[in-house]
Length: 481
Image (cartoon, rainbow, N blue to C red):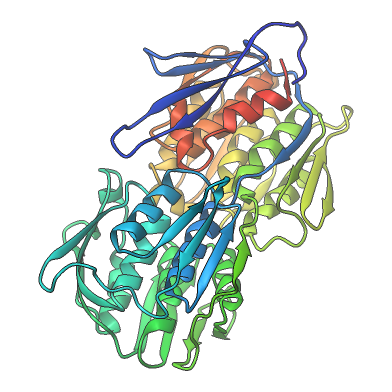
């Protein structure tokens, strides 16, 4: 870790158990620029001069949970490597355990799990008539795919989560499953979990769903379709947001032996056909790509400070749409160098970042990082087509507006976009307490405000355990304070 003066560091890795909301596990490294007030649950970050170094990314959250589910539905055993260690993946693994789908961690590597495939749908392990209850926290990548997959087997299930999960819509997925003949419901008044399933297998069919709120609904239906007895056709009746995540799903299904037929344009109102003959077969082993959303923080940090950062684990051959965030940083003035499995970002000190106007419908998670990069740009930045922010771990549009305003920006909020006017002369307000709203991406995104030469305080830094428990430790290792 680079440092202007030698002192003692506090960087933190965070972990959570199922019985604890937050737990802190300090790790000893080398600088006191990251410190935590455990009683107040606040991390203080000293001003960051620049970021320099190489970051090996943790496994992708989206790919990790998809891999686990497809491995469970496949014929044969699958070794899943570079699995993300985080809350969302823990909830999926705990659900598979309760469903009696064997998933064994390697004794010498917690990121490697071998899943015993069920060669078809997952049935309840409980006696007929008993309800199998699954608690999935705030893990949308576990709730939505499992809700679809369990409709294809047999048994009674209730899928529930934390209070925020009970505010996250799932009605469009329930609608699609019902069209296919499933006996499945969510809370009628809210269209949100808990989800109640009385499963007795499905015989295929056709479903037409909305793709305006979340691409996860379509992805969930696609992943579950190969284990029904019959052909399945799913069509989008309006528009499909976050299409790269659907492409990611289809690409992963192909690695497990299933070919999805795409009719029409993914940017329009496509349809998807899965013939009955398509069945999952284990690829024996699969490596989870590094998380492109997590890469965005280090990519933006290099662009803001003018340091040089290489992120390893995703690059020009990535299947994840969020790698396109590097293109946005290039539009703002950064220099980006691509390799098949890495991205290197820097910025010439004579080149100032410039505000941009970007459609972020395909990169909604990384778009949050753009909101903080906008504070350091000349001129306003417009972040468009991000209505899905309002349906995520928190109401992200409101959260982004509130915290950017605290830091000195003027933000115009609209239904599905916002315009961020940076502070005068890009001078960030000092010692601001950032509220994270129990949202991992809020904590990581707004840590970059320290790149403005100011102290920043992050409330509830342990919320990064959802996808990136060691984020602050790695940030500290490549930062010069």
